Length: 191
Image (tube, rainbow, N blue to C red; front, side, top):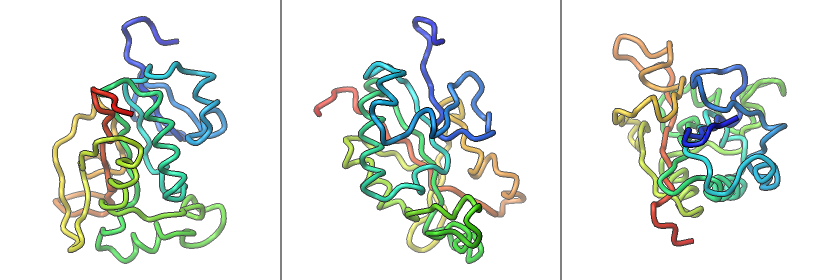
């Protein structure tokens, strides 16, 4: 249980991952991004400081993603954020793109088999902005495949599949990247 004055930070679709000790780790069965009543049963609106979702949003359509973002918006404190990482549609690596494509690369039990969208920095920004967020790009590739990176605070949510943490990124070479954003709920809620 969260103590008074303690930050409430949530990991959505945590799986076996525990990159964020001290955060509440959840699975879809207990906290579905699109089912507002799941959230209402656990949290008060405006109670959550940070939400982290690493490779979750690509399992939703764009429209479902907007709905999920709106649910998160309702339960975040003003100034809070969703740190979201998804496969990057502009990463110039053929094998990577084959693996993350819609429907995935092969058998139904492959994690990518349920991918419904491959985001680029334009589409993910648009999705979160439709829900009322301001978006800060942390890691992404542009249309020319050039990788952009700004230093981000791991205390605000560690993304394993990122430039600094993924074991496939070594010796200055990128083997696996994510498109990573902070979707920030404005301090003055105009919604």
